[in-house]
Image 1 (cartoon, rainbow, N blue to C red):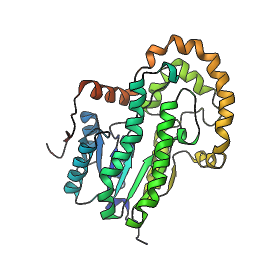
Image 2 (image 1 turned 90 degrees about the horizontal axis):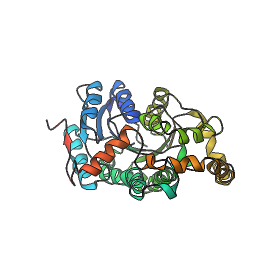
Image 3 (image 1 turned 180 degrees about the vertical axis):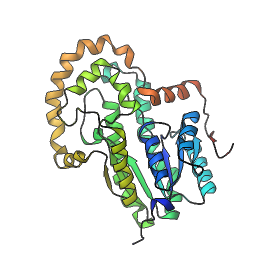
Length: 309
């Protein structure tokens, strides 16, 4: 069994690194001595985070749903550093509201970014991870452990990435690659703050049972993720109580079907009256994805990096 190299000897790729969990994770890994490559859609934000991560950090503008661009980026990152030891598939967006009142393209884009983008990330970087006998950490969510009304796109995507990561773990183990799944509850990021700007969704979230109704600070959550990366853990829990959800997750769909239906019925008039405000992904990251998708700023196979400039 190969010893796990210390973080100070690793090259770590983080997707969705322009803000939130990805940006904090990159900074903390860099403080531990890792060389970090930051991937995402917002070049100026990525460069700013990379500057905070030290002279060995690089930033690469790429859409995780563009496999050709991701494969190009994976090759260039490996050429730049000589190896890739860990990849954190963190990029994601969210959409709230009832399915019947949602925009189908926006709903589908959540699945495309969160699930298919994670699949593309794995496809692009697994060859390099096989060479280094490295580690892939797939960021999932509390939404993978329990369904939630008004979050069907996000829950479906995060349940999907959890199942995907668990499935490929056995496929790549003989090649020396380890695969982990990271779970976070509501954490203080642009995505969660963006969701809370919707008064109806915020009200629905406040009715969740403790401790699922709290918003947790970002930095301690990311500290736990860094510790999981250092151990190459199969399961990483950003909030300790999430571990206790695993044994009881089987009962949650039936429970939520009863309790959640009452809340949705009570909020239905407000939801219908404000439906027009929920036609795009929430938060600054969602806005960035919408801008790229709508404006065509990145074309297939295109990418920019601070290493090129």
